[in-house]
Image (tube, rainbow, N blue to C red; front, side):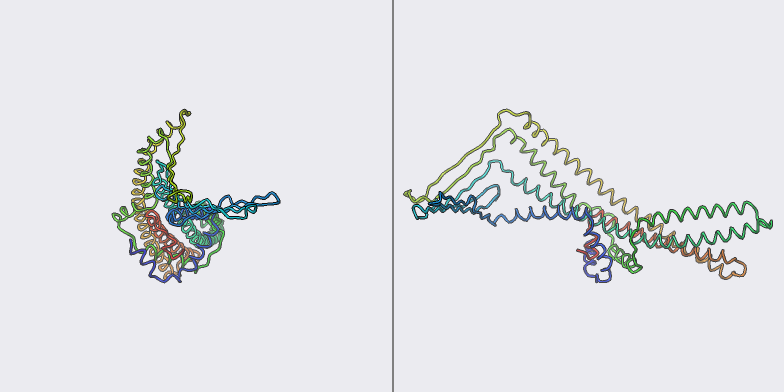
Amino acid sequence: MKKLALFALLVPLVVYGGFIDLVQERLERDSSYLSSLMEYKNARFIVEKNKNFFIPYVSANKFSLNTDFENYSLSIPLSIGFRDIAGFDVTVSNNWSYSSRKEEWTESGWALTISRELFSNFDITDLENEMKYISARWKLISVGNEVFVSLANDVFNYHYYTRKLRITKDKIEILENQFESLQKAYEAGTASREEIMQIQRNIYQTTNQLYQISQNLMGALTEYSTDTLNTMLACLERITSIIPSQQEAERLVLDRPDLKAQLMAVEIARRKDERAYQQWLPNPAFSFTVKQDEGSDKGFSLSLGFSFGYNIIDRGERAHSYSSAKDNYTLQQRILNEKIDSLKKSVQKAYLSMKIAESTKKVAELDLQLKKIEYERGLKASAFVSAGDLESARLDVQDAEAELLKANYNLLIARLSLLQALGYDLIRLAGGK
């Protein structure tokens, strides 16, 4: 399957640019995709931000200027902090002050403070952020794939139903002409009432088909050129040209991003389950400070800090959290098992759909050949075949061509569904961004 992605990169994409441009335009108008894109950007920002732990936060909090209209005082604080480094926070700070009354600057001295909660669980937080990022990326790919397939369906359906509409209208016209001729023959006594009823039935049946086609065509509100159809079909042919074996696909599907996210969810639940006892313990915070002190013999002073809070009596929140952590681990394991089974079944269904589509295409090919043979036979015997029957045979050939086009498209969609099931980004495979 890796060859598929490589093949997609090597083949020139200019030919498919028109269809890909339409995909990009629809993505820019699709609210679900835009919402997923925003969610993905937020999740990616959090992950990338946490990886840049070596970049400090520099701030001047509580900058102040005070005056009694005769004198004033100025305070300029500075803080340089590194946050959440394996659960530790490191801060370097100082404060400069100026008094107009004394006309002098003073400083509090540089201080280095290192603090950490005993139970920081920073590893769980990092894993949760990574899981949210992978889930958001998978959602973005899934919604993009849906937009891609939806546009492909719109393009195909417009041309398919437009062609079917024209053919069906021509068939109704032929049937109506045959009905008029048959009615005259009936009045002359050379045709039976049964023949008239039969052709009336065919007219009503074909008209009903016309209504159904018109209803389906209403779903395609946009007109697409024949070039767009051909470009779209060529694009689908290219990205589905290499399909893995079913055995390989059942292995590849286990690499899907949403399954990786669920594996992380299980790991997160396991760690929370193992640390559920923390609900019953206080979570003390420790701090260590080294401060510049000119009044000290050593020139600096040391201090240690220790603080914690503890709710002696609650309304059962801790017991509930403890029980929820235990239950959630079991639940996430179950979800994982169900997802693995579902993904394997989706691959099996995809291959079965492809087999059905391939068989349907062969039937359509044979049906077209038979219709062509019948039409050619009518042309050879045109002296003995009415113009209406000959025209009807020609329309049958066109109808069979349309059904073969549909059968081929359904096969492409079945292959496309397999790629979706395997977690491939169809837009990127097609050369989009």
